[in-house]
Length: 377
Image (cartoon, rainbow, N blue to C red; front, side, top):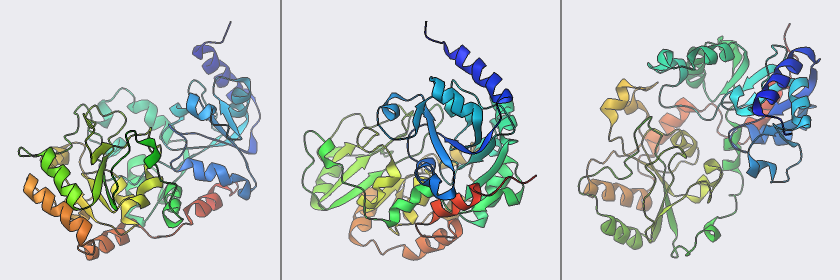
């Protein structure tokens, strides 16, 4: 009879405490294959370490990548028990049903983006949540986190209750790809095909807890007029919502189309294919700043968002483009972004300097240098 998840959890808990750790064995994971962990996993041998990717996701297990093991397998169980270190982007829960309970296992949290909104303990609602105590226990195990600038390191230290020296200014491994030739295009994943175009816009709003996003938050929004404008600008607009957001694009248009994970699994990888970004408070904006391309903001619920979860930095201090309040202003902002992208370049440079110490493709290398250091006694 197959083991239940409860048995996998119990076995990993017991073995995790009993089995000696191999300091050179690193286990990696995430809620998908990509993000900040995959680049480090793929190069961990450069640091003299062996890497195993543990997952329960069928599509990752079916990918055929070397070093990928199921969290419901004997090999995965043994790797988790012997791991000298774990590298993740969210929480140890990403390895379920396995657990990594031993404090002899080092925990490196690469996180999944430089946040604009307040997260974790900085969120005013954090301590009322059922998982708060468990999260605090897990944070106490973090040996290191990784940030992009002193300002971002400070907010990580405060949020995750770390000492300043535990937060390393490496940059994010996931953004290294922005300095390489663009990933292969993904147009062949659209059926029927998209119309020919020379420009692309990505609309990528943040996730709102308990509330579907309003993609075009204007009382006078006119989809037909937007399609006409995009045709005039020889452009398409691709909409990507958070996978847990029910407010995704309801109907595909001719030039306004969805771009969810089935089209582009990792959004950062495809950012170079876009000429402009539309967002509100998503951390994809900070990634896009590295490309020095224009952003249009739709902060339609700004007053409410300031209250909860709130912002780390005043929203006005990080905006580098227009915030249109009606459909006509939105169309004008979109036209400006695609025809005069040099506008607002000074604002982009100012905010990029605040968010990034390094604007290069060496973040993975710098992270490897940190995780390869022996544990301090």
